[in-house]
Image (cartoon, rainbow, N blue to C red; front, side, top):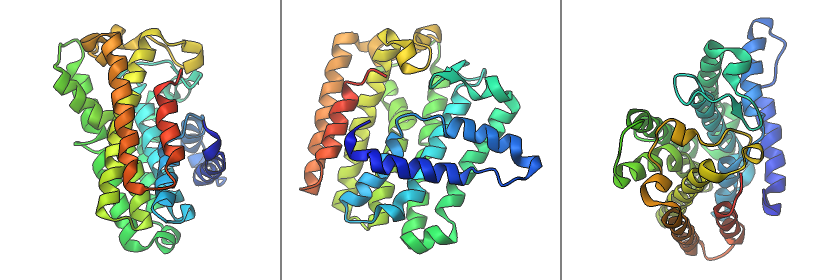
Length: 295
């Protein structure tokens, strides 16, 4: 996405591929193929890149944070597989190609998503990971991811989204839904990087503030792109929010006010980085770039 993260991106891609490599076990070939299909489909890799960036920002070694970076991407990917299912958003395209269930069937798509979730915690708690990061820091990072992915995090936000379909909800409910559904995993990504580096409480609080503001801006841009984005550029269908009668920042506030909120949240994310004093320019640039993205 930006020049500053290309080296990290290559490391993430290589490590993700290694984690889902087919070891020549015939009975596991299909599920691993399904897992690889979605995990290695590209995308921004925003969350794992943030894990490495915040680890480095807090004085840690990115190598120690790499398993945690991969873990958060596995959780994100499993959520996308499930989100695309007919019982959820029923999407046929993701990242420019057919969604997982359209290729492997609904049953295997569900199981592949489940397996990616389990693999995320496996890689964070393997002996080699504990040796790199330290057992206490690894356990804390894993706990953060579990909390942010669960009923009061990503899954909770998805549940609010499902229950709100076809209903008029308040801006407060929408904000809480997006804090959980979108922001929580970004929060997990940045705080895991901090924890692996041994960050202090002030740094953890600042990282969380950055993540929550960045995540909300990211979600509002998603809402705007669903309304008027280019489907080919985005690699998925647009107009799904309206089709599912979902309340969004655009439908509740209007396009102009939604754009103003993106600007405000981006400024808040940038302001949060003041707690780190130096080395924050790439993260500032990332926040500004995401606010103007077209896909």
